[in-house]
Length: 454
Image (cartoon, rainbow, N blue to C red):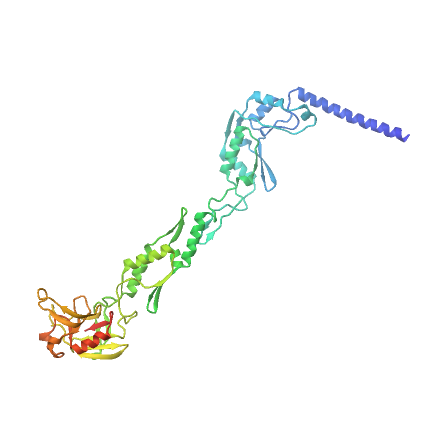
């Protein structure tokens, strides 16, 4: 009895399934033979399910429900872009799409996706971008190129998720015109940094900047120092158009400022004399005088090589030592009034001597000032009969200024020195000394020893 009951139920179920299949077959047959698209049909991204070819053509030409699919981080976004696109399809080609759908597609209601290349396409880019920007999620990070900040630190590039709409729209426009499938991974259309920290130019510039930052050019002036450090250099560095540029106009101003601070050549000095207290002395050839052009070139060469150095400026003229007192405590002192000479070494008087200086006329007077010995020579003839009107042989010659004047022995004076001899029988500007004291002084002094004449 039970078996009969099961058989009856099974028969009824089978009959229901059969009738359902028969109904589906009937419906699908009607759609198939009536020239309508199947229940799940898309042609060129337009839903034409159940439409006739004419209805599909009209819908496709109007871009009704025309949408594209975009994916980002696993999420899909179906975006209707019909308001931004106009297309015109060939009716025969749309009709031909029906033949590409099989009866089984109708019967089993399978999804059918077909593509046609439109005859005409017009895409409104601004509207399309507006639609996409409203439909898609906002960027969480914006792409940025690598760059050097204000302190010339290398900041690496940023890979953001902001969309390059120019590239995306160009791809969509091309695919619409070609009738291609309109599905896109947004990751493929994000902006990409154009400049990366690993680029050869950036890496090279960064290495050079690091060298500049570690540079130190130190100029010494005795205990004083003037320094060009990395911070100063970097204020004049810039990275532009793939090139690191160091402007160097500031170097000449830096050197000019050093010259203003440390040059003493030609300046007025206070000098403590042996017999006459403190006197003011102006001029002379002793003094620091920076050669600004050559020192500037020197700095620029060091900058070009990113080379640190502790050095001195290049000088046109020098003094005995740096500081306010550039004469120092080793010098020759000559008093025109007293017709006397003293030699001090390290502040201690070593010798003194009577002298005869130049005749006190404009042409023959001994030039006052703080001078320095710039040469030493034995067995020397001074002057010429043709030019100076005299020719004298000396054993010890120690020139001290640019006027041809110097310290030397004068044996022709036969031991007569000092007093007022110079007023009527003075020299042509040189400081005449007895042979024995001239010999001693010649041994004591060296090139650069200051000679103070007042």
